[in-house]
Image (cartoon, rainbow, N blue to C red; front, side, top):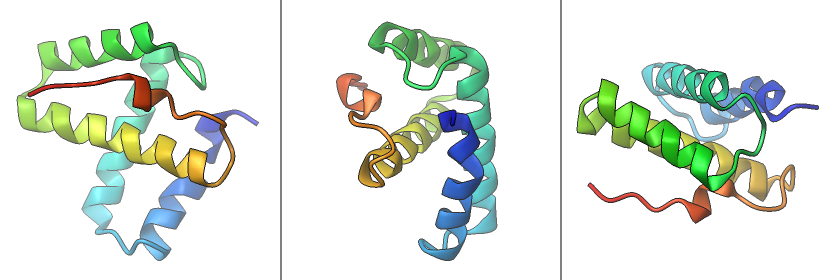
Length: 97
């Protein structure tokens, strides 16, 4: 099963277990779909993630970029916690604002 297929399961977790606001969940959905469209794989290399972040900086304001990166971090942390992946690829990426 592809990790992108786990997206709906993760969003349900956000709604019912974390009790996140519907606007937050909508933003997570958009952010994660954009990311998967860009990287075209489940667990991208560090360089691919960094290229994606660079593209975000070209298109969006800093506040939006921070949220999109945060969306990725919590999604991969969830996958790691649920033992769906062994290593969180976002741990290798360090961002400064």
